[in-house]
Length: 375
Ligand code: IPM
Ligand code: MG
View (tube, rainbow, N blue to C red):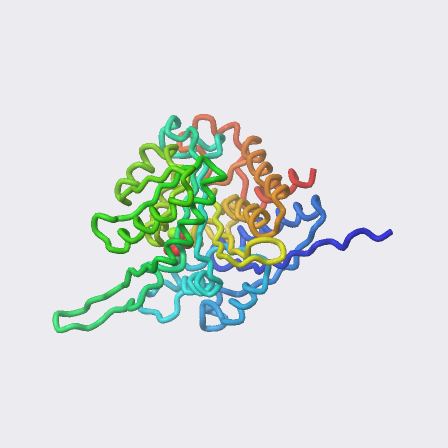
């Protein structure tokens, strides 16, 4: 008797720059371990994208790379960028790869879950009592707003140089992301905080109106509007009060880095960028840690791979229809932390208690987690 053919998922892999390739290698080994345990496999396709794409091909990403990312079941990305390509006057920049993928693949929703692993409370600069019960989801609009609005350029004027960026949102763009936020809140604590600057910006006032309209279809979900300055303050003062936060592109970028401090280290946090397209296995999406390329520690086996490994778990849940395997990876991450394994960024701010911990590098952390999955 022949068994069912092993299911093979096609994943586009973008290691990128700095620590990107190291954290991606960790996530790949953990996904392989999950595949062995649950009976599926992966066909990896590595793409040369970001600063390394500029060095190799002269552009951050080629059209055929975007097509390969589209053809895959999901995309796993490490990080792009670094000081080598930081010249503000350069016509090609590594970050252009992100915008080509986000815009080109229609990934309008960026989901950034912020949770606190109890074992890491000492690693957060916030008071322990503020961290209890923190479990929020930032839903950031990703393909419009200031990042995509045109014109965006520097100009010469009779009064000297000037520059312009354009903040533009259509009601359809607002409606689809806000609807997703309400849907996701239904699977959580049923509260949506919509963040804007409605006392100043016309776009923000449109966000408020459209959010109110969408809310009519979700009467079981509580809605609050909050100005972005107040939201930033409240995130530091009482983060447990938030459930789902939904906001425009730039505010979401800023608030998610702020929220990351709560989790103890930027290195811990995963993200998913999704659109409406579904493949035979789930939603098509791009998964990456929230942290950047960390060039100062690149190539030294120092980077924390957990944000990428948790992004791999999100890949299994959202794009590949493997929620059980996702949960096993998440449990393995908690288990490794319970056992005291820490990358350098996760050591407590105060040395007291650190003696019970085991300092490990990127590879060792991924190995410890893979071993737990294999059991
Ligand atoms: C992020 C990053 C990017 C962004 C940068 C690298 C362009 O900060 O994904 O949050 O601003 O979107
Ligand atoms: Mg950012």
